[in-house]
Image 1: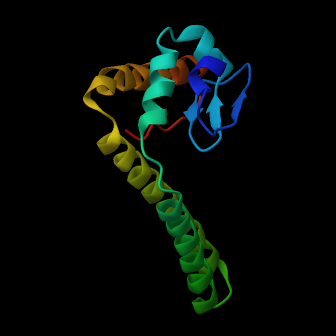
Image 2: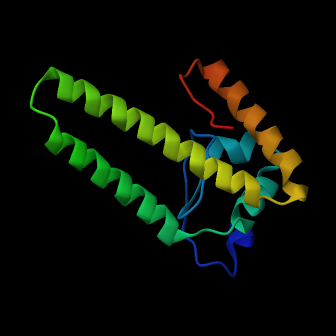
Image 3: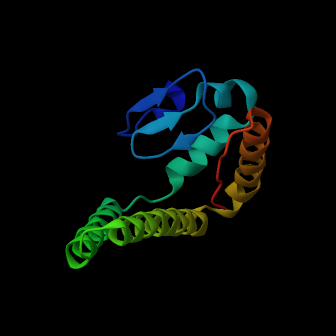
Length: 137
């Protein structure tokens, strides 16, 4: 892992049980490294994607502020709780789709094939474990 991260200002975390790869602090699942032969290519492709921290924080804080605003507007009760849960779900999924969309647009042509392979690998592993996993593609 050190050879992939040299000259980059990132921390790296790993474990022994997961298959995920996430950016910010690079999180690489231990089983992913053991079972996916092209793991270095996936990590390097994700590291090439430009990361706009200001845009990400603005999005997250703005959506959080929206939740608080809606919470204050609604009168207390079951309807308010249901509305807030529904809004939280929609905003979470919308944010995930938006971030994945930006990432897919930023990934170079040389990475498209390996990222598609990784997506299929992740889906297959989720089915094998019978996990309720959602892959935003």
